[in-house]
Length: 196
Image (cartoon, rainbow, N blue to C red; front, side, top):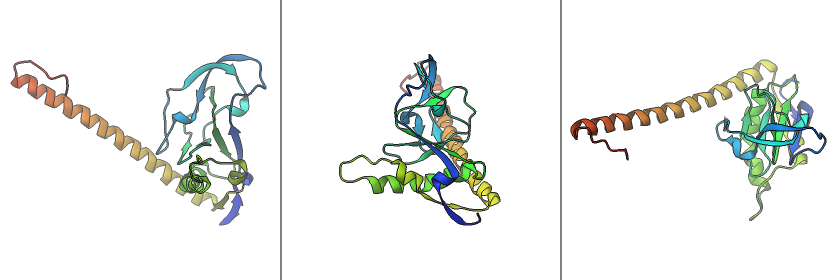
């Protein structure tokens, strides 16, 4: 399988999650990931919705899953956390690579082409969306396993670096505001400015 093109459906399991499953009548309070939790640069809002609904194991999120919004997809989200009992809901697609495909490599490839596919499916005022057929028949360049792993790791750690730099910028801004406020308090005899 060196440098071959294969269909996505041949190297992964693809699950379209549109609504809640009715297959299981046991209900309990569960955590749900929805499209609103998926953020750019492989960020994920961990403020999950909690609802009491029927669960379906097919909707359960696993480590190394790739999540894609079905409507207006512009990026993917790679799951690098081993969640306990978190489920997909509301127009999400789960792509679960097989054991012969590096999950980070596939996440990188899908992230590169998902916006192009989305824009191609948008016509006029119609919201862009992904259909099963176009996703399943997506051609993926399957490199040797060691190259897949290297490319996937570079993509993953580049996103991690972006997350940390963003957080560092936020912390620097907080520090600067605090220092300015302290300076004003010292110059005004202890009257701070809460608006800074």
